[in-house]
Length: 201
Ligand SMILES: C[S@@+](CC[C@H](N)C(=O)[O-])C[C@H]1O[C@@H](n2cnc3c(N)ncnc32)[C@H](O)[C@@H]1O
Image 1 (cartoon, rainbow, N blue to C red):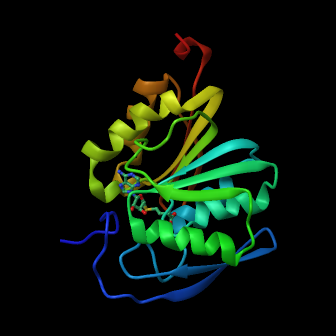
Image 2 (cartoon, rainbow, N blue to C red):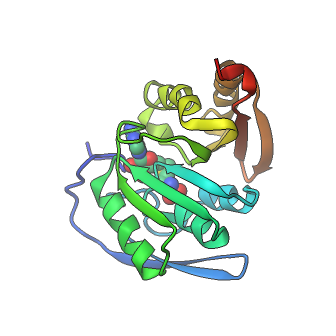
């Protein structure tokens, strides 16, 4: 069965255009069949974008889809350099088109299965993770994320309460020894864990 996290979706094309406005800035996105939340920006992603603090430095959007989180961060934080990755080739192609469409130069998108094609560390990692892929997929990503964060940098996740936000927070606590719920809205929790100096080994 095809999921939004399929590597090469075969579903017939259904390209749409949707708008998203954040802090007075309007972004335009192409979406397509075979990618996550193609008809409108996901409420969890929107809550994440509205919750994030100002960011600078190198930022990773892990599981970028057609790019709403990464593009919003890049547009709102011109000093940041945003890397966007996804396992789904069709999603990455859309993210690249959407970067061009919105004239965004401080971001790039490419295919990666988790951190496989990522070689550097980030000032923040942000993700609306592929919950439907299951804990066996997402918990290793949480564990690995600490290796891709600079000291004092944070991982931000959005997870629905009913899709296991509490157990995800516990998992993050076990990996990072800290986890804050920095926002709760419409059933979505925004979680933040920071790489503390005790993790620098
Ligand atoms: C919940 S969607 C969020 C998409 C996008 N960030 C948004 O907010 O609309 C999760 C994304 O993770 C991607 N994904 C699933 N497994 C992945 C993996 N192993 N590595 C990278 N991305 C993955 C999916 O293809 C999907 O685009």
